[in-house]
Length: 343
Image 1 (cartoon, rainbow, N blue to C red):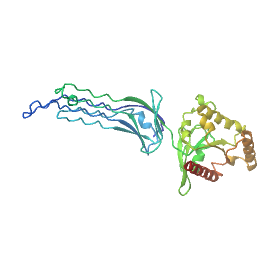
Image 2: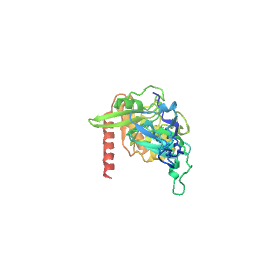
Image 3: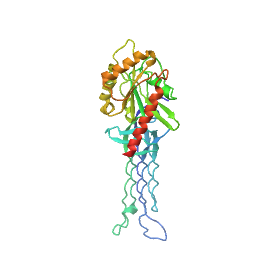
Image 4: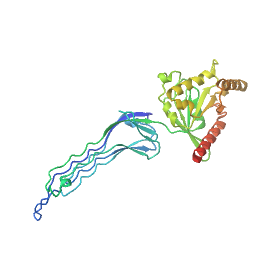
């Protein structure tokens, strides 16, 4: 199924049932009085986070959802049946936004979490509601209130512990396939990854983390170059960013430029991604260089960037250095989890 991470839908809650105008008519009870019942409430509309869904593709075909209307009241003081609620299943990690006002409604980050997005209309009042000592035969009723009509924008942000970013052909997809069982498309031309890919990395028994690979960024992505920055939102839920750099460009070029291009695009998209998130440097494709050349380029880049975060040299193609990288990531995630629990 095609990966779709944005959708616009229209939801409408049910209309409330009308109140009933009725009088009790029985041979043995003269002047029986009013007995018109109230109308039932209209159904509500909910969005429900559901495991097993990983795309919003279904909303390309069905974009309008409506809850059931409430039934009108009837004689003998019978209240109309309430309309059935409508539940719309969406992937875990879906953000719900009012499309007309850009207001954030809810963030469905947990399985089975529900968001009430449209209230059903209240049922109308029957004439029995208006009876009193001075008005024993009221002929007044009220109509059921209409349901809410709302346009919603759904944005899916994948849930992952680690996010991979870098220029096209930095080896992100190769690394994902090397450390997990994911099978992303891998080729020598750029932009082989057209949508986020997820993989589960199992370090030891009971110890694992999830990695997200997003399409590569190029200079000017914030202005729409390449695939733009629409997929950067998927990194906002991660706890660690791995910045992959091809250490063996041919012909050789200043690697610091490759790093700064991504840093500029991160800052232009969201300042927090650039300044606040843990970001490690991973130099890939060391198998294409001699050990002396690789170490020289690594040391030069770290010095030019004045890099203080962890940095690694790996070969995703051969697996060199990948085990040590995964172990370091697992330890980092576990330490952060312990730190949050203590606070």
